[in-house]
Length: 127
Image (cartoon, rainbow, N blue to C red; front, side, top):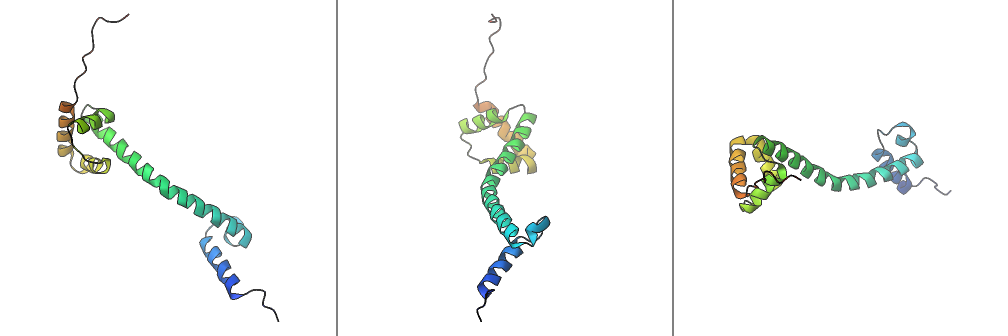
């Protein structure tokens, strides 16, 4: 007699149903729904692993902006000052310094302030 439910098919089904464990409704235990949802989930997981890098960078920038504003600088002026002072620390390390060692960050902010030229506002040139 011919075997309709072979070992390979059962193995494939088991793998999909194991991946779909915990999904809402029938997506966790019906093969067709589980297959569709697992395919979609794996696609978005792949995309979001790439997005996560940008999200983390955004977090560092937000932290740096907050710390720089406490020292009287905006994020962009702070970074500009560091580049002009030839200090090559990446945003991750700067963020860690801002959180763990505020005194060192204060010194970096002072160096950045000295490196950027001050812009004088002209008085009486309003139209």
